[in-house]
Image 1 (cartoon, rainbow, N blue to C red):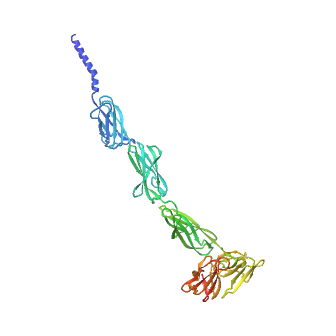
Image 2: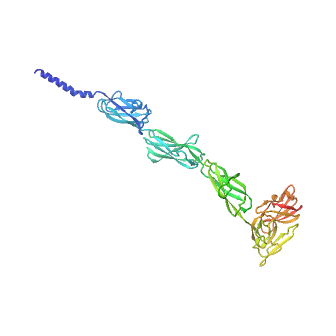
Image 3: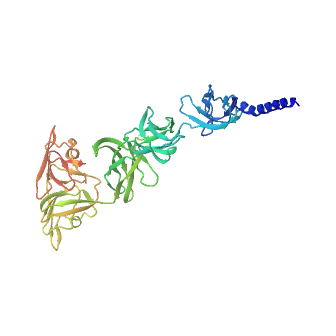
Length: 518
């Protein structure tokens, strides 16, 4: 019985020790293992070599923080393991991951007890992403347009700026800062205005550089696109000389057009010589240029022969094209009228007039050619042959024209004495055979063309006109002489320099008769 108290005391000591032991064991530092994946927000792993740091926020240890680096080859499917974490009791831990420059980082907190093995994935905010939306590549853009270049920028951090630049094949050139036009600072559309005026044609690219609030950057380059002159050339003064031709007559004709281009310059012009179905293009010839309206206008012409077989309006298409890579084109029409007859107006002034007919009238009778005379008007012509031998007619009210001059024809000259101003409208055809005999002495001749001709071209040296003289009447009331004399070695000399449609002439021939063809 005496020993009982001793046994009881021993048991009491053991019981007390057993009660104290859990407290003692829990205070012993024990490992906490942490492993997991350090990844970007898009789910991909960060590169190997990033620092991963673990810290016990409730307890302090000399070797804190516990560090490792990411390594995707040793810990699959994880890319980090920290086995040196320590805790004496349940604690809150902070684990962080960052790149070598500290720009990109992520962190997580968790609780763990001694001997816990924790899987903790760390999400890292990544760099921004940017993509050029317009121009994206393949476009053809008109030089001179203000282009809204555009890019989409996405970031884990707020995007603070998007800068644009363009590449011209040689160097990158700034466009300027973009403006957020849609979306948010973490996912938005940014635009900038790019003025292409004055830039040369060619292939270009656009680059967008995005920066986030963490100082991280990203860039993207568009595909290649083209800047080109897309404005067609300007055209004016499209015309044909002559613009009227006789049906079924072969006619020399010249087509003209003036062309200008503000951007890349004029390359050329052509004309379609088949007014009907189909085309028959002919290159027009550059013949000169001039300046007008702050532009350089190129003059083009095309000379040819036409024979139109029916009356009507014929439209000839003229096309001009510039030097742009797009080869911009513009067209216009030149109209040619095919007629069976034409009309030429001769002004008759009160008093004496020296006239002739530039066309062959449909009706050569004096009544048809001059249907509107005044009472007492007189007209005189020269009978064919050497010297002046007058034939004449007078208009008598109620009777009509009276005399031996009964018809009026080209190649003859006439003296008309009018009692009032009238206009003679001669309707007829071109004179096919502009020829006549010039006799020695005085001749009253007509000029049988409807366009003027220099005197030297009409009566050249081949006719041996030495000392010949020609007299005409200046336009206006009464006879006001203009004249010229042919001087050997000099040519025609005087104030009569050309033969004009509708005018008549006195010609004095010094030498022998000659057959005049013009």
